[in-house]
Image (cartoon, rainbow over all chains, first blue to last red; front, top):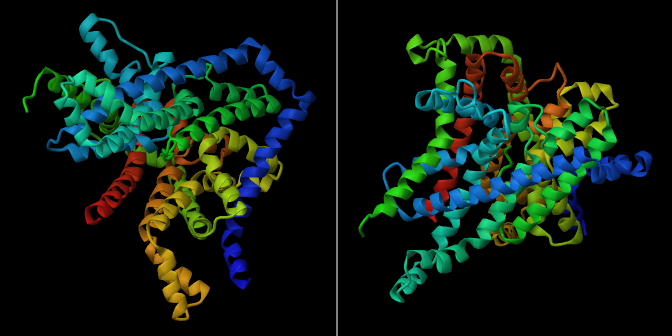
Length: 270
Length: 262
């Protein structure tokens, strides 16, 4: 019995921290969003075009980013696992750095690449005589979200591809399968759980990415920006609470899918 | 094996993607050290912008270091015992605790920040102090610490070690500090590195929780991106990268090491 008490002592700090600074605030948020005029915020979200549009465009952007980074990262990840070359380990190490860069810094990198004085602008000036400025539009957000999504998937694909049974590929090859058939019937099915889990993490991160959108422009109507505007400019706490709970529910759902597929939740950037 | 078209296409594609991820880092490092970025590197290299950033924003750098260190300390005291408990027991309470600790990874920082403001925003002394940001950072980083220690504990057979020690008469706390803690050292170290990196770079929560007197480095970065010239923003980013890249490299080195021996 004394033994048990000592074990309980170990988790008391964690319980207090979690209850006081996480569960209580979340419960208060839910309470506020529901009690303010009987949860009218949720009704507004479902009926007012501003909120529907914000939800829809964030959803669409995140989905496109997720699919694009899955395709890009599968090609890169498979290539990096299959071929050994000098400097590969440094390259792989550098690929994992962006995982923990904060969203603001990624936003700044997009400005560096595609801003008014950026690399693309110089390139465009040299090629067509006109500066290509993508950073402050939805394209800039797309670039930024890709920046923090690609490393996540590449690392997952590499992890899964290393475990891939080489005998299966040999067997397929000896049965006369060509490269595409091998990719479609052997490699991709083996990677699928990893792709689903890292894809859901990408999607969740993109949905909740605030820093990147904040740095690039304030009038882009993605969900985290809408929440921020409701909270600061409109001082509508109930609406901000309702929107962030919906956002939280979506991201929680994604990460639950990811966990079901056996993925670890890599650090959240954005 | 012959290297056909497809190999070179994939190589080029891979290099392009890596360039996309790495070039902006180098661009902002050079821009921070260049006299005039619009003219280019030929305008000369300088540390002027770095000094200017230091003059303008050094307080944010100190606050960030302070918060990151205290967050780590709290995570060590709270997270390590908790991970041990979770590894040791299978009960409803441990399942509940595990769920509560993982949730903050899934919930966007903004939601957590709004929640904290709604509950504690009225206590102005707490709201105005850096402790308010600290609380947010602890909630956000604690799961990573717990998971990283838990992963190590689940990979070793700590029960046998503990039973051995217990049979020799070691008390509960002796076993905890002399058996458990040394054995999950790698998990603790990687959890510490993760906490430091995440806390130093946390923006989504911090932006909502900060006050004009409690600005952390990423908050200052957002501020400089909005209002300063490109060279100053770049120099500031350079300082930030200088702070977190060593941590990242240490984490990489640590993660590679056990694989070699195993």
